[in-house]
Image: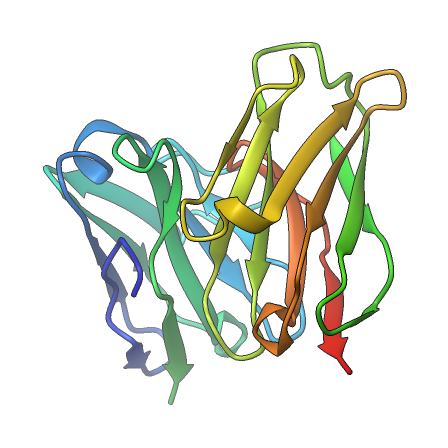
Amino acid sequence: QSVLTQPPSASGTPGQRVTISCSGSSSNIGSNYVYWYQQLPGAAPKRLIYRNNQRPSGVPDRFSGSKSGTSASLAISGLRSEDEADYYCATWDDSLNGPSFGGGTKLTVL
Amino acid sequence: QVQLQESGPGLVKTSQTLSLTCTVSGDSMTSANFYWSWIRQPPGKGLEWIGYVYSSGSTYYNPSLQSRVTMSVDTSKNQFSLKMTSVTAADTAVYYCARNLDYWGQGTLVTVSS
């Protein structure tokens, strides 16, 4: 049982905009920065978003993050076939005194 | 750019101790107050935080694994380590080391089998 709640799956067609949600509580998302990762099959998670909405260099601006209260979202615009992957949210949890993760969302590009 | 690399046996026998080391390059582990984590991912499943260590040696463990986990740091080698005792098949996973939630290693698969 993951601390953060994500939908297990999401889908879209090429060119569409897709959003993935991440729900938490006041002890995690509500009071800490949110990170988003993309994990391609057989690879390590790649950081897409940090500090709620910041993109590391090299991450396309098609990827954007937002946070409101105890929830966060990752939006992917101009969907491409190479975006098909698992996506995870993460944040610090004050109750756990450590990082917590979402269960992951499998994105399918139809 | 900081880089992390996990190393250790890929196969551990049931009931024995899993030992992994993470080597950090590109920055000193003592350059700032980062926490250095171990995170694992069982095949086909999500991510689980195991614990973390500061360069001072202070450690914090996931309560669900606390009784079996020990982490340590060797700043002279820019390395930190994980030991997990009494492993079972449920501990089979890809093990990642990470700096805060920003930089991750590529991961190493550890299989537990008799």
